[in-house]
Image (cartoon, rainbow, N blue to C red; front, side, top):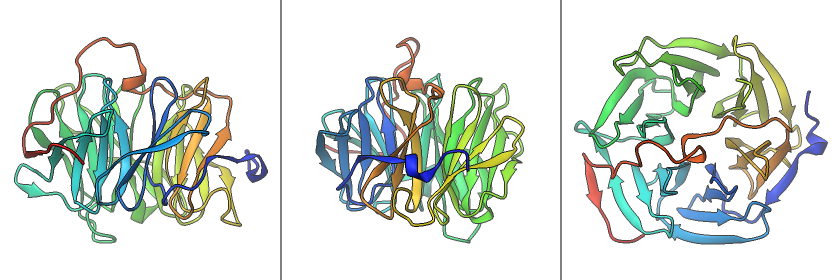
Length: 300
């Protein structure tokens, strides 16, 4: 292994089986719980506050430039938008008349478009990827069908959307065509045993992949070659790892949520992560109000 498990440490503990993790511009960390908790955590892990509860099961968490919080909630079968203070602003349960089945993860591009995966049923090969265009309606981006569509990531040039297929232990790459349509999915990396889940790019173009069933983290280069970065055979520091994100004072630490335990783990990679849309300079469009198949709410 390239990164010894003995060097993995915990940022914060006593969370309720966190699946999602996201990092704000100031390195504040956000995470979710399996009973719908939404946590805000200081960058050093010393301060934890629960700012909201959806009442469902929080999977992927994403931030926009205004630091509104977007939660893929599997329990409610919805994507939920919260204000930075935890007020529920909107709930989306269907796109183009299609009810959401298992919304899992989302990612913004630099235009403010939000891509999100709907995993579908386990081993049912009916996963989908949707997109909210900035100030537009939610729409189908790529119908797949995917074998449990899970984590998503965009490369730095935003030419490709990367999609985890958890049931086939691989990551697909979908070209985003000049007119915005989805190209044909192609296999980017495979043999990511077992049950890949979360994705994050570093600034060098390497893709990090967490695997839920084997407590591994893989690093995949730009050519799709995967190497085992770290594994926890004892299920202590990495235990059913799900989402991952770069954080820390220099954004060169990989933060990993652990659904099988109560903590977020830290790998001090000393390689900066690829900045996400909300972490970049505040230019260009702001976040969409999420119109379309949306139910407005007052508060969580």
